[in-house]
Length: 60
Image (tube, rainbow, N blue to C red; front, side, top):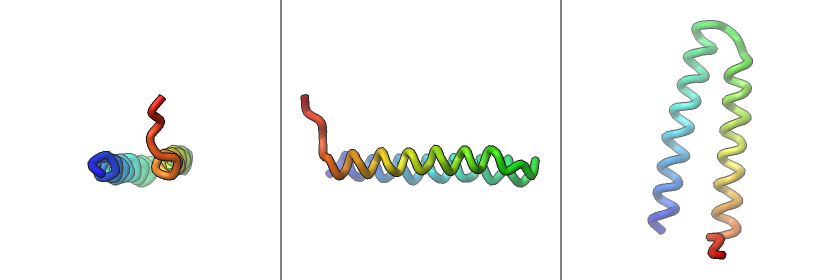
């Protein structure tokens, strides 16, 4: 259970950091490239965390 809570906290903090950075760069430069890259990275993070939660721990 602790791993789920720590994972959720990590996802929230990384989402806020990457989202804030993307917004700041977009606001200052008006370039859409970095926010698009940030969205793709966040989607990969969300997908990876979903797969980890769905499949459970990999105790090999």
